[in-house]
Length: 55
Length: 133
Image (cartoon, rainbow over all chains, first blue to last red; front, side, top):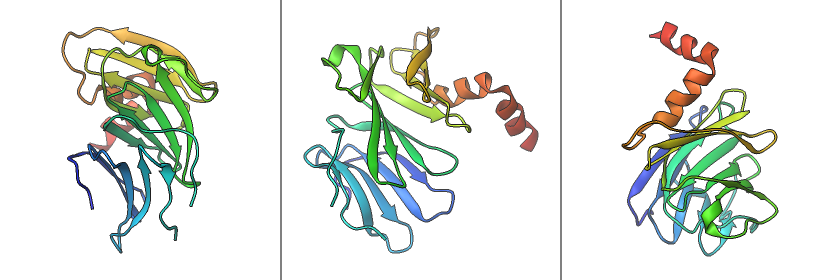
């Protein structure tokens, strides 16, 4: 879930992932699986780079 | 879980992705540009602003004086263009991580100008795009 305003969105060329940037103070960059809508990876201020789970 | 390298301290304002989906270019209000390896899911490099203190070993100083609002990367992944709210833009070399050009020619914001700058610099891509229209 994104808490802040989305500032930029990208879709990978294979349409597998959505890359989302937001003003969210917790996790500002999130990578979603396009099919499942699950967060694959997120970058945050507190955790630097956190991979929640990878396919 | 993997935890490494750069920290994002400010809101992200611009994103770009290489044609092969390998790298994400991240521009933010702290005036830095970060390169994230999308395939390996790990931070790669930071172009950091000179006014933000001493950069670490993975950083290179750049000179944006306002938040970045647009980033783009060339098809060959050799050049990054960044534009910011003060009306300036930088052309950065990715292979040797250095500043190639810096311009300030407009008074207002450079909205989406990084894309335009790259197209002008890479004339072949520029004409290819126009021929497709």
